[in-house]
Image 1 (cartoon, one colour):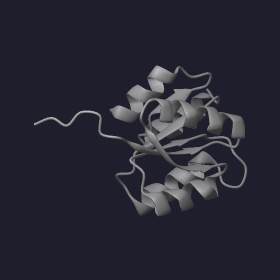
Image 2 (tube, helix red, strand yellow; image 1 turned 45 degrees about the vertical axis):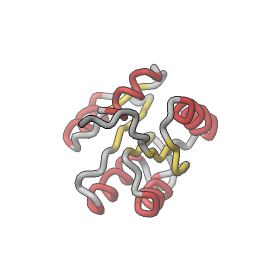
Image 3 (cartoon, helix red, strand yellow; image 1 turned 45 degrees about the horizontal axis):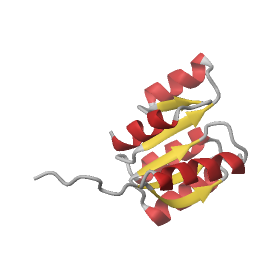
Amino acid sequence: MHIINVTKSVVVIDDDEDTVRLFSEFLEENEIQVVGKGYDGKMAVDLYQEKKPDCLLIDIMMPNGSGFYAIKKIKQIDSNAKIIAVTGDGRFTTEQKLEKLEIPVIYKPFKMDEVLEKIHN
């Protein structure tokens, strides 16, 4: 028996408040529940622990704890955490680090259908 349209819960983290707002609105319109919004790596870790979302969307370049800091901390808490990096940083070193951590990445400017596909898969 297949259950269709199971609502996913997501936490959105980006140091740009407009990005967080736009992302959140888009996800809500597509029946994905945004259970938390944060603006740095420290908030990402706190929100993950508090909300236990199905998925965490996180920027990499942020003050007060980068995305890498948050990813490592969250993976220590829950090795099965589903995290998707959303970044404008296309440097090879960033790409390599994410690949090593087995974190899927969406590059800015992103296509929203790509975001939905990664959340649902």
